[in-house]
Length: 101
Image (tube, rainbow, N blue to C red; front, side, top):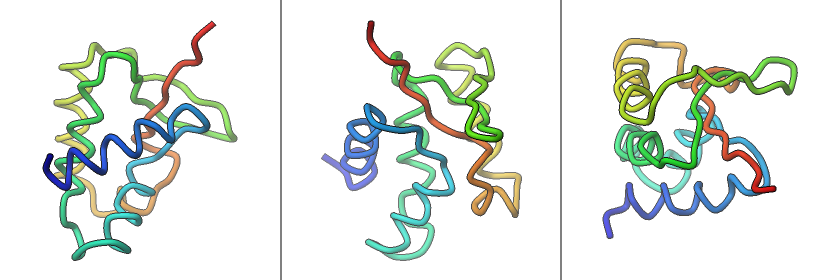
């Protein structure tokens, strides 16, 4: 398994307890590996998981983007490539795993 896939699996497991922003994912990757290493790959692996929703979190309230997994994948890729401040914004591009009832 690649480092990106391994990191994505760890984050996927964490999502049973709380949402995880892409900014947090980048922080963890920087702490464990070289700067920027694997952030794109891990975020893209997560974005296509059918059980996950990608969106924004404001005041601890998650709002999904309302996209299908392949659309979320494209938007996450676009966001990662285009925003300078994105990596520090923990309320934007958040991964959410809906609770099973």
